Image (tube, rainbow, N blue to C red; front, side, top):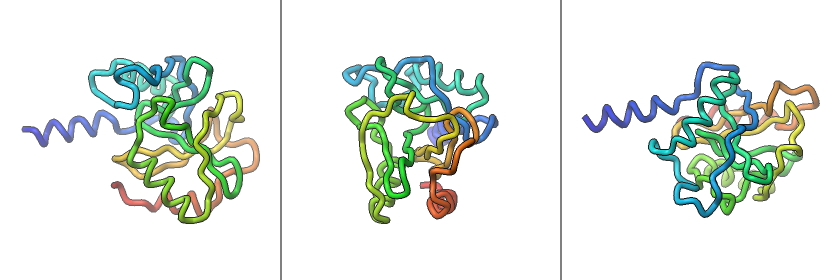
Length: 172
């Protein structure tokens, strides 16, 4: 019986069949870093259910939750990473109250091994142009590329080798 519960739990977090790879900002604010549920994904957190529904309503893969100042934190089912140059990525710092995800940690380790500089810092939603490429991480599914608000309208900002590599990763 317990195994069936685990399978149902994982199925509940499978990305919806929506516009694959498009993410956008949630209107639901992030939990403050000192909130008891900050950094925890829980079935008892109505907050994340609301974010997931908002993403589905927009046709997005996930909605990225901003904090009170408009800095992006994480999605309902993903940590986020974005490429700021050919050899640098940025991801929100853990002190923003985000889940210290296993998929996030694995991706950051692999990128650092390849000589990519990892910067953990807040990123304001106004800094990302529409179409900017991001990487979504989750412990259950391989990392996946995503577009901020819309498919890219400017030059691609993720190297082809990185896209090919993360798409080839097996599920953890």
